[in-house]
Amino acid sequence: DKSVALCAVLSAVTRQTLETAPGFIMDAPTYGSGKTFLANTLALLVTGKNGAMTPAIKGNNEPEISKVLLSLLMTAPQTIIWDNVEGAFNSTTIATLLTSDKYNGRVLGASKTVDVPNRASFYITSNNAQVHSDLARRFLTIRMDTKEQNAIDAIRDYSELGGLHTKDFVIQNRQRLVMAAITIIKAWLVSEERKQHGKLSANLLPSYELWD
Image 1 (cartoon, rainbow, N blue to C red):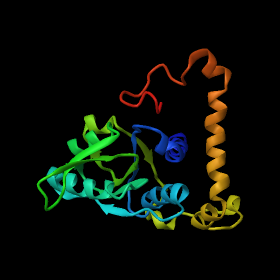
Image 2: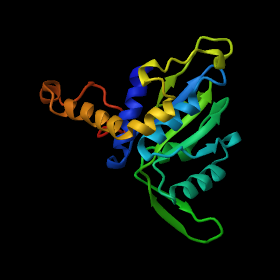
Image 3: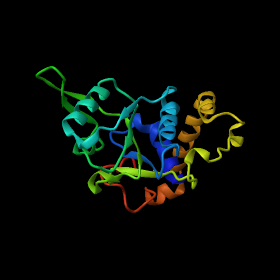
């Protein structure tokens, strides 16, 4: 889970340069585990502002999902946070979004369709959501379990952040953190491993070969 969280950071800071990238699911067994907080922290890292939360649409209503996504993408967001997914979840609309650098939709109140660029990092927060297999392959999951019966009772250690709250630390050190993430990527690009094999894994993630 820590490696996937690091992957989410690296993906967030490079998303604007990539045609496509997988989404990330912040999943936990209980409320208060920090799922939305993590998604918002990633948004804060890349934009300097809190991420806009979009409440997950109940019942997999594809027309409504399409309408909401188009309205969001028309504002050219860097992050989309689909908040509080519950139960069985599937969406052909979101599946399409995650494998395309453009999104086509009908403008609300007009008889025309538009193509809008898609360079947004897509995050889902959930409590034990069951994501359909075809949609699940388009996401990487960060499982967040505090091991506490009541997650909000978990002890948060801020000692490595100089005693600052995470949000304050990111705001004060945003440039340094982004540069550190880029340095990790650059180190891989010039590494002997990449020169010899060209990739980290023999199994590239389908639809995300460039990202991988």
